[in-house]
Amino acid sequence: MRKSVIALLFMIGVISARGDDLNIEGSTMTDKRTAETFAEVIEGSYSGYDCSPEIDDAELRGIVINAPAVVNYTPGVSEPLHGGFARIIVCATYHFGFTKFDFNGDAEDSIVFVAVDEQSLVSYSGTMAPYNDNIAEMDEEEESMERLDPIAGYINPNLAVIMNLPEKDADYIVYAVLQQFESNRVRISVRASDE
Amino acid sequence: MMQTDKLPNFGPVSNPLLLRLSGPGILIVGPDLAGLDTAFNISGRFIVSQEDFERMDGVPHRHLVLTVLRKSLYGSMHPFKNYVIFQDDVAKIGDAYSGWFSLDVWDYSKFRYEGTYYIRVSLGEALSNVVKAIMPPSTGE
Image 1 (tube, chains in turn purple, red):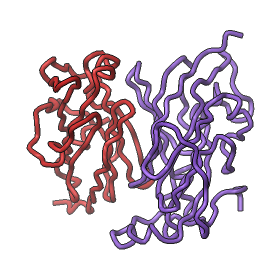
Image 2 (cartoon, chains in turn red, cyan):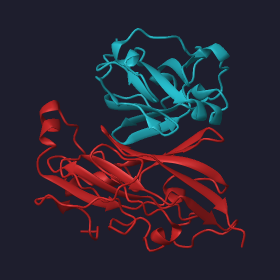
Image 3 (cartoon, helix red, strand yellow):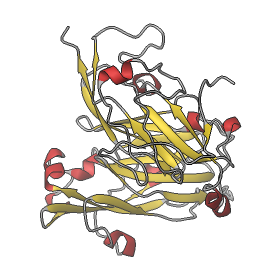
Image 4 (tube, chains in turn green, purple):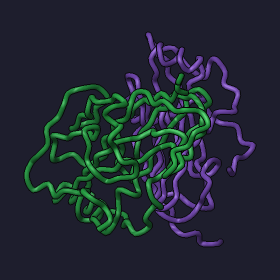
């Protein structure tokens, strides 16, 4: 299996929460938004990090995201491995029902991230991997079964890469959606480094 | 983008869900079932705080972001970015501002195929409810 840590079966209640703003119902996101917290994240990985939101409600079905408040970049310099002009990392944690969003469904790769540049009125969207057409649509009965046998996992895209964001200073409002699921919103400021 | 010459509609819509909005946020309504050969109309209402209104230069309609998802296809766009917005398109209610909008998703979506669509509209940090609409295959008639 190509994903390292990924989804955990939530047979036991789980996960602690840290209080803070931008909550989505039944969940709180981590308050660690410093660049240092995100420095350790391998972009494009499926592992949990300190930046990964923690969820205390085993009943929650959805996506919770966390991102650095400020991202600095060096003008004209691209990250050699993935090519992004900056590491605009979003740490996302998801809880979905096992019935449809199973490991074979690669649901996490189908999560659509949206970044809105409020200044220039341009929005960007992208997924960490090609959207998987194999995810079945749920009927109402299946949606009610979402409360059973949930899975959880992590996804850590670099928005500069998956959305091909332009190299410029900007302030983004970011969120993630997948079918009927949606995340909290976070703000990210991207600034050229003075160095 | 399949943008048309149609003018956007910023008039109020008589819908109980939209009328229910009483504080900052955004709500939308749309069909459960629509057609590939007919309009895919959604309507919405938003309320923004004075602070957000000023941050949006007094034209929150331009900041609305339409998000369209359909299985492998997705997109997000500012549908009213290039339209003229008049002062009376937004109403002051107490210390906040309220506005309405209606649009045909097909005018902005870059794809138009059968399937299940998930439509949302965001405004600043506010994200609307989701409208889930099924598009049956075109009859070709």
